[in-house]
Image 1 (cartoon, rainbow, N blue to C red):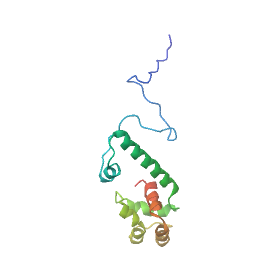
Image 2: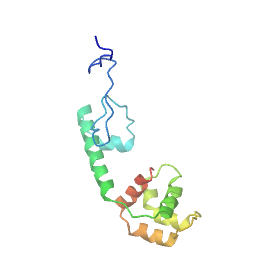
Image 3: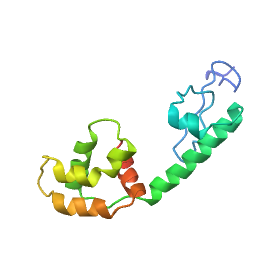
Image 4: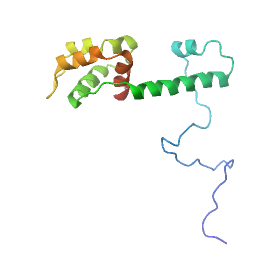
Length: 140
């Protein structure tokens, strides 16, 4: 008789999935309730079942992650702090993201090494996808 307890098998209610690294993680087992606000409702309009909706959302998320990974703007730490200060208003709508260069020119935020005029020019030259990637990289 062994002194080590027997490991539960998958299907046993006490079984716990092993932790996965980000690279290994491909799915979350089980259903996750999601609120369908207007953007998701429009995006999934006409889809008839959970598999179609899930497929559409996962394809869109995969493409979005690829876009975010390929876009952005090289920022210094003072520039990142300035944009984070602006983003701390909360939810950043697409319009507010488009207006980031204007917001930088208006903000009273100051820190050592920040050149607001140069940051404004950088952001004005960026595409909308670049601006979204910047906001996402800051966690907003």
